[in-house]
Image 1 (tube, rainbow, N blue to C red):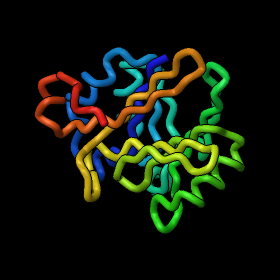
Image 2 (tube, one colour; image 1 turned 180 degrees about the horizontal axis):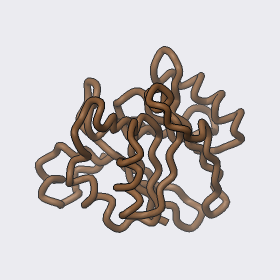
Image 3 (cartoon, rainbow, N blue to C red; image 1 turned 30 degrees about the horizontal axis):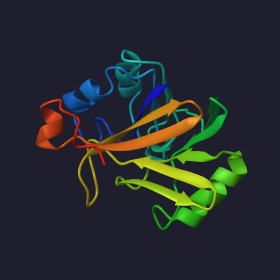
Length: 174
């Protein structure tokens, strides 16, 4: 299963639209996960045109009155995955994110909130953050692709601002 992961789009609050290259990157995905701060249901509708989309509630979603679940749990090929905005302070604190994963009972926790991408193992938990394609902080705009196959998960950060990626040659994955 190929999964597209995106977070912190902040449309129309801080950006006007999702960059077109994101739709190209997500073209063949089976599912899209949005880790919060979409701010408008219009973003969700756009993503759902590509693939079924799940979205957790971010801090800005609450401010804009979007009623989304705080935590989403699902299992793919016996891998337990959780989706949560990851609203912890300081931003991206891996110990607090690990505790969220333990509370959810997941092996993989996908979060946003930081606006920068990362793939980190903390103990027996894999923490994933796709960054932001529209308002990155101290990093390139990015999304993430997850491939779950034969009970293995492969996560790749796709820097969407990279000229190679813009030309749709996705060799720019980390």
